[in-house]
Image (cartoon, rainbow, N blue to C red; front, side):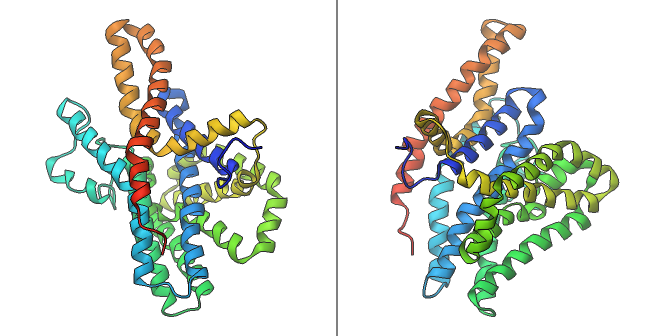
Length: 352
């Protein structure tokens, strides 16, 4: 019997655990920096499949989908994401006061409303929050687009129309507005240029719900699709700078191909079953703690590095501190999940 919770999908837990390991690895050692791009994009695709999939299910299964259902969807989403985010916004403000990465005072008000990188680079303060802003704006705007489309089209057609809009418009904005010379900060991390990154996961959720024969075909061919998508995705950190050298439009296409490639791997993850119960349990725990791990790992790694240098000095201090910092990230994330995330999850409104 699986050691993981029966309601959870162990393959998707493994996908989320892999994503956070890639992100932490990016900040753990400089040679692993490229893997951070893949980790964040994996999060985007998985988030679109799971959270966007909830929206798809609500639209297709409820007698109606209107303002009340939309507010309930947002409330459940915000009970999940906002408490820990605001806690670490305060942590980063305290860190700034102690000499950490700073933001101009006139820009600090943008962070609580996830607008620090809406159409411009965000800077170094609370830098990892750029991806959270992409997600929050996506789950604000995409459901609104669906609600408007439902006034004009049948349910399934409305979902596909909103999906197409969110696949096409951000790609066009990247081509028109993207600054290829500063592609990482000015394209990859800008909200309105990256809203389509989650849409590929939503597309798979919609296929799973409305086209079961097509979904079954994807699952049957999952090994081939995962190999193709994995090769393309792993090559992307090398490919994106070369596309940037060709201009904003090739780069815009590259940022469509990256999440599309990772979406090809999702049927494989979805069908994955881990071979050992303990591995499944560990994967589930890392998956559960991944949001807190994402929020806390940078300051913990930096603090661990500073402590190692202060006590042992030089390279020896850095090397000794790194494993201890990873343990600290895990333990702190477990505590945050239990004492910050779970209490709010228990209090969020019932699904409408």
